[in-house]
Length: 476
Image (cartoon, rainbow, N blue to C red):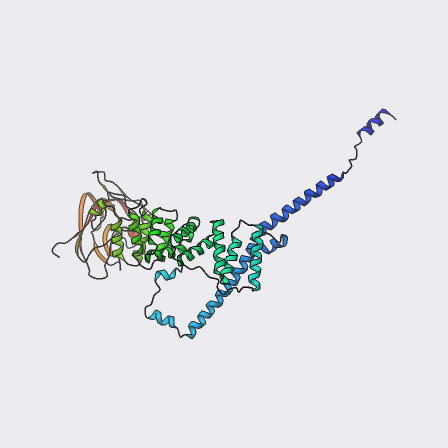
């Protein structure tokens, strides 16, 4: 054989023998990949398509929970629909008793609109019913696959509630709360149970757990705490927790107006917080004042505002608050509201010819959508005089004008001459008016652009206002 032939034989590749262990290793890797796809695929489908997820993996915990939850909700929805139909039929058979009550002026108090009880499942599922057994079986299987998940226990507690087994339901709820604080329904039910047993400290503790994790549930928790405040049973526990300024306090105050049956309840709470290390925030006070104005409870609103003032500010209270514009306005209605106005600059600034601050307005070129600068006031019936100092240079068809209106019906009581033209020096303008005995328990003072048409909104120039006062006329 030639030398070249030998070299060719040496370069020929060898055939590798397939060893059994390589085959086994490859099969193991394929099996592991298939198992991974099988399990992750089932987990991915658990919430969106739980039935398909269970076909892939019959014991997938989240799919079991989702299936059981959907089935329970379907049964509850069907049962509620049946109860509503029965109630309508009974109402129709009763001859319209509800309509008669409404005709007499009967009204549901605010507290009744926020029922603290959650939707119950009583008489929805009977013990031993196939649907109950299926849901229970799915929940228990899910619990075996995901022992740290509280949702299967919640489903079992709902079933126990439906069967009237309060003791078992209570035990399950306690287990849920011990395991996790992320299951609000269980904690909420325990809170209601503590409320029923007048364990006020426990009610507040559990309410704190619910709202700390789920502040959006404040509309459901607030009626329970409000009941304790209004019944003077456990009110000190509620106030003490709110004095600590928990993160959910602002959510509670937002839900407070819809939960109360006595309009003075928030006032009592605000006064209790006033002397604490976390006094009422401006936003919390405003929620209450807005509620009172919406109910036309002007006297309580004004009294509340006075009570929230510091002693020095209370001594300086005048019919018009901050009429000299020396302090920055709050967002409360008994202070100046200065909304942004398209086409104009409206703000408080120091006047160029003095060290005092004043209300400054500068119009741009073109049409102005001037939004009134306003303040709510409360004046007793009688005769008064409105006084304002002003200067500026305003050109247009109509100028700026101060008004006093009745808050109840927007009836115009007073108006000053318009600031229109050039007034280089400060000039005082006045307007006398009377507060009637009826239908004018609160008023509003406002500065507006007296434009009646779009063409009259074409204004330019600057204006200054200061020392806004309302003085009661003597001898009346």
